[in-house]
Image 1: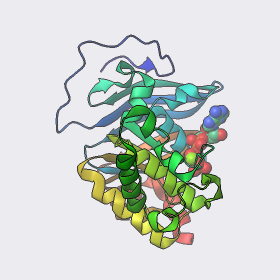
Image 2: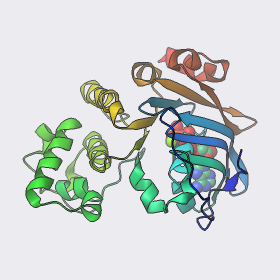
Image 3: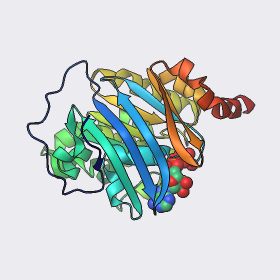
Length: 274
Ligand SMILES: Nc1ncnc2c1ncn2[C@@H]1O[C@H](COP(=O)(O)OP(=O)(O)OP(=O)(O)O)[C@@H](O)[C@H]1O
Ligand SMILES: [Mg+2]
């Protein structure tokens, strides 16, 4: 195995030549991932693989490090003061340091736990990243906006007021708008941090169907507290649990047995109490 590298060092020299991706190899893989916050360990020894075209759910108690894990996978951790990460993360077999961070985040899109809106209209917010990266006519953008808002189940709610400020939307609508913005970029991997936490059952079902149906073109890592949801959408699941105050991962190829793993016992018990 290649020596672990400090993820927060963006100046790390690229390895050459970049390994060629195998079709049966995981699209995204982390080995020996460790994270510290202000010198205190919060994640330890995380080995994690996302098979191509799969949905991997990450579950575990609040504060165990799920969001931090996602932030490592697209190098957002480097932008958080006080956080330091170490370990090896590979996208398509190549170190995530072999591409620039912005390029990496185009390939690994992220839906945050809290919706992030920019000042401007609903339409501007959907197009925020895509319009800076790609060229298309207004008619093409209009068609893409309509398609992606329909896909996330938002078109009927906002299609007639795309010019209104995005800030008028409900939290659940904002969550779906942010997902539309991510999907418009067609990233290879989509990281989702509790994507349906603010949604009603109907909208939640739309998003779950969307995730399952897009596996032919994308792979997903989905953080969820909802074990029933993990059982519905996951091809594989991993559970983070605290040991000596530090988050560790219990990986398993099958979502259902893994969610019954002793490491997940507390989470399962909590869910059963709901
Ligand atoms: N920038 C930071 N500085 C200091 N501590 C941090 C920072 N970011 C995260 N932590 C700590 O790391 C731990 C993991 O946080 P994280 O947000 O990843 O948890 P989580 O599993 O996503 O929780 P939740 O389910 O509540 O969203 C927490 O104890 C948190 O306080
Ligand atoms: Mg979180």
